[in-house]
Length: 151
Ligand code: DAT
Ligand code: MG
Image (cartoon, rainbow, N blue to C red):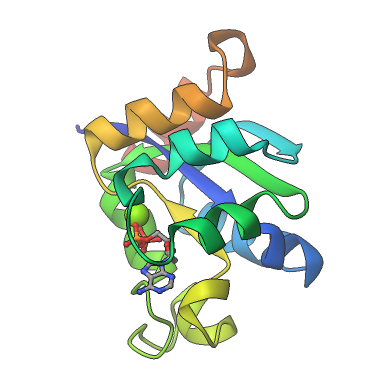
C-alpha cells in the first residue's frame, strides 16, 4: 500500500460560495480520510511560503492577495495514492481545461478562482502540510483507512 497524506485547501472562493461541504464530500466519497481540518485566514508570510514555487511569476502577487483575502479551510487527507487521486478529483488548474465531473470542471470558471488546492507530489505535500498543521493537529484513522482499502 502507498498510503499518502496530502494538503487540500478549500480556498476563500470555495468558503465564500458555500462549497466546502461539496468539496469535502467528494473527497470523502472517494474514500479518502480527513485526518486534520482547520478554518483560518492566512497571513502573507504563510501564503508566500505555501506558494514559494510561484514567487517571481506574474500572477504571484494576485495569488497571495487572493489566498489571504478571506478565510479558507485546510485539510490533511490520507489514502492510497491520495496525492494524485485528489489532483484528479480537483481537475486541471485552468477550469476551462478541467474535465466535467472534476471539482474545477463542475464549479469554477477562471484560473484565479479555481476553488481548491491539492499538493502535487510527496515532497510538496510534506512541506505544505507542515505550513498548515502541527503534529498534534492530526488524528489517527488507521482503522478507517484499512476498511476503505481492504473492504
Ligand atoms: P495548481 O493549483 O493546479 O497546483 P499551480 O500550482 O500551477 O496550479 O498554481 C497555483 C495557483 O496559482 C493556481 O491554482 C492558480 C494560480 N495560477 C496558476 N497559474 C496561473 C496563471 N497563469 N494566471 C493566474 N493564476 C494562476
Ligand atoms: Mg500547485
